[in-house]
Length: 273
Image (tube, rainbow, N blue to C red; front, side):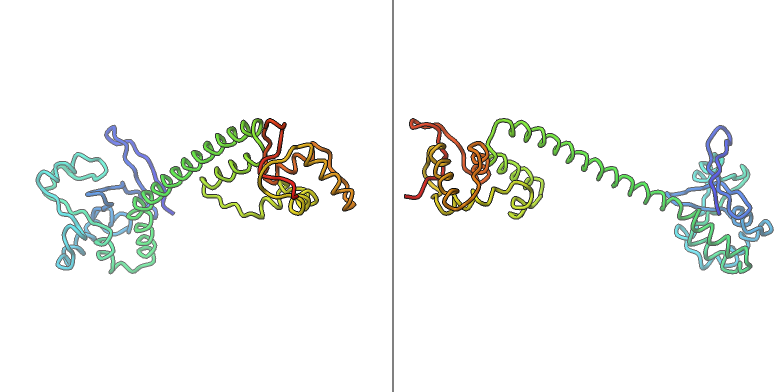
C-alpha cells in the first residue's frame, strides 16, 4: 500500500510516494499528476531507458497534451528549478507522461509486479489529487450544513426565550397561536391532533359543557359561567373543577378574559338562553 513521505530538498518541501518498493516524488503539471520515464522504470524495476524506448516505438499512438507533454525552452527551464522533477541541467527537452499515457505505455508490462504497480500508481498517485479535492469539497459542504444547522438552533433558542417571556404575560390561547406561527415559519407542520395528545387538551367535561350550554359569541361574567358549570355538573353527576382550574380549561378552549363595566368576563362565549 502506498504511503506519503515528506522530504526536504533544496530547502523546499517535496511530497513523495512509496509505490511498490520504490519512492518517487509527486509531480504536477497543468493541474494534473505526471510521471517521467525514469519514474516508470523505477517503480516497475525495469532497466533505465525501457519506458523511453517503448514510448518512442509507439509515439504515433500518443496524443500530445493529452497523453504526454513535451517541454523545452522556457517551460523546461522552469521545470529544471523544481526539485521534484530531478531534471538534469543538461537536458534539452523532457517528456512528462499523464495517467492515460502511462496506461498506454505499460500495456506490454504483463508480469505480476506490473499489474500490482499499475493499480497502485493509478489509484494512489494519479487519482489521489482528485480524491483529495472531492474529500475537501465534501468537507466544505459538511461545514456549510453544520453552520446552517447552528444558525437554526440559535434562532430556535431565541424563539424559546421569546416564548418563555410570553408565557409569563399572556393567555394559553395566545401562547398556542404564537407557538404555532413560529413553528410554521420554521417549516414545521402541526396537525390538529397534536393539541389533542400532548397535554394541552381541555378537560372533556368542560368541553362538553361549553359545547352544549354555551354559544361561541358575546361575553359572560366569569363567576356566572362557573356557577352555571357547577349546576350542570350536579345535574350530570360530574365532579366539578375549582374556579381556578375551570378557568384554565376554558382558556385551553381558546377563550380569553377581559374587563368590562359589569366586571371581568370571558369573551367570545355566552350562555345559551
